[in-house]
Image (cartoon, rainbow, N blue to C red):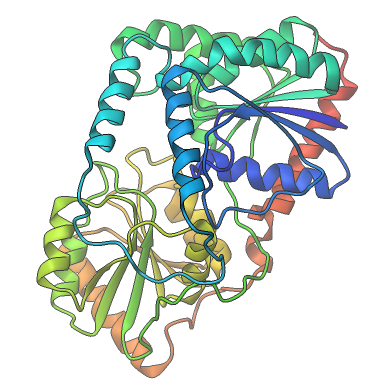
Length: 428
């Protein structure tokens, strides 16, 4: 089959949605399909992302005035930098990196633009994406068009392709109308969401909770399937120079710290266990973590930004991986699937029973903790003793077979199956 993917977020973007489609398009090509990607020219390069196959065709367009300027600056900066190898990386980020005027100006300009462009500054891509889409449809003649949300701009482009008679799969992920949608865009977000729900030939979400919400909000709609985030089962060469101390209980947290992810009790529990160390690979961390890292440098280690493939290697090397639950109990953080594929036990910290708890318990992949300080302290006592006895992994099933359904090859096979069904059904 011939797939045309509309994806604003695509490498060199390091976002979770970019990684999702980097892996899925790679697997679709490996399964013998032709894939073309309509995306933006982001500028520069991001090390450590999945390697894309040479057979994958990428059509990059101007991202719009503001993002286009940033792409130009990224390209110029990249051209001025000496080549960097992709074999190893060391922890290099200062605890409090200086904030440049360029960063401040960029964020201010993007926030200002988002007041006038739907759904945010990424919507400025639309005037350049629409003619590019028309050319891709005419020249590539895809069997399936797929829109990768976010941003909602890709869904609006998918609706255009559907209006021209192409079969369209919307990879919605989360609803368009979300708690963080600004009030000025809520009506339009709801309208795009409803049109997508009714007109797409098939709709994909990453968790069942999103499907239930859409059905409750809009009633009967298009056929819907869950294709979660996933993990790569490929072997990795030695990529990082960040050592783990075999005498310590080495914990690793990767990903973002949203407002609802509070690490304070976790840090307090670590303070009482000098034999444990929390390693954090994140671009930005809460102020409380910065202070903790400064006062307890032997127990809190901030690694800053690390390339994706280096993070995967660290995940496979740590003693325990830390996951802090989302606010919505039906949501599963995307990085949890990477954790499942790492072969290491997971400590899931949650204040309520959630889908992640069920997943970890069913797969026997780690511990679920209520996140209170007494409960965390008891866990540290237990885990430290198990580590000393060499029994930390006992009682768990950490092999690859039980989680293979969440690997990117398996998820791409499911996407292929859905696409074949869509093609067989007469176009609506």
